[in-house]
Image (cartoon, rainbow, N blue to C red; front, side, top):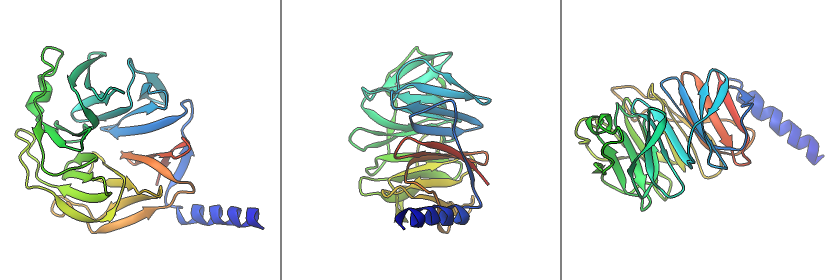
Length: 257
């Protein structure tokens, strides 16, 4: 009886999520994090091996990283020692220390969170100059305290240690000046903004959500919609119509509408 009920539950969830066709990610296993942007996809696995997707083939990148990101600002990563690097001409160039998360999805600027949840921003002009010649830290501290943040064309979204959600719009790529954080309803443990401004996130129960109604004139959107999955997820990223998800068990899928 229990087995039958479980099967029916899965079938019901799949029926609900008919708008998304999800397929397993093959030829790469035990992933713990994806990031997608500008048609590029990068990932790291549980052994902290970084990868870059070329066509349908995963190409191993040099080094060892626990977190990786790709976007208009290039490819960046963080190793187990909480040191941040930029990928330049086939090599990783050190930029700063004591960083646990970074996002390259802004308009040629990056944002990130330090190990003590201090958010920061690095301007586009500074990023252009990082070519292995000067690895001194030139970041600008942002207000508040957050554990994870991500930027797109209409602003930066973040979550704090209590899983509260915030939006910072009008971030200047040349100065990192901004109008501060605005609180958004809901609770998420991680959040990602796509190159087109779409926002997806995962809550503490492993449920996946997307923000509805986001436009340039209304960057906060109108509300959250659940993206039904038949197993709990830990990480999500989206680009060019493809939603990449990682489950709590390490199972990975790519979903399309």
